[in-house]
Length: 109
Image (cartoon, rainbow, N blue to C red; front, side):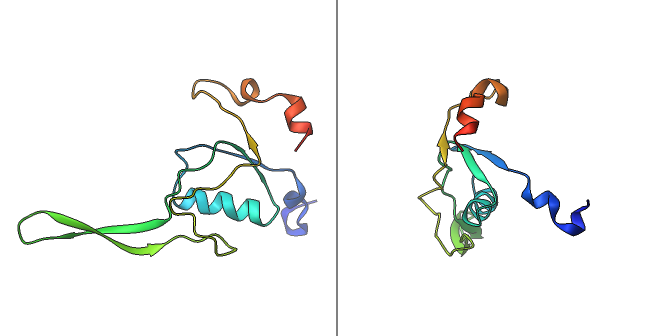
């Protein structure tokens, strides 16, 4: 079977996020979660839901101007809120995924 038959989309998908997951990666995680395609594990995401540009001022300083905002597919605004995970786990960056989660946790997803 191949991708053209859609079989690969039935494979369970876990997405690990933490408080440093921000902007477009948050939108992707939210899209996978909201569409029932993946479970999110880890920590609540950062909540960066705006796109900003720096406009220069005449004195050499600048001002940040929000020019757009990210929304999830269900039109939820993540800015300042982040995305809640399905299962909260805390991993240290040097730990492997296998050491952060147990098989028992995975069975409950």
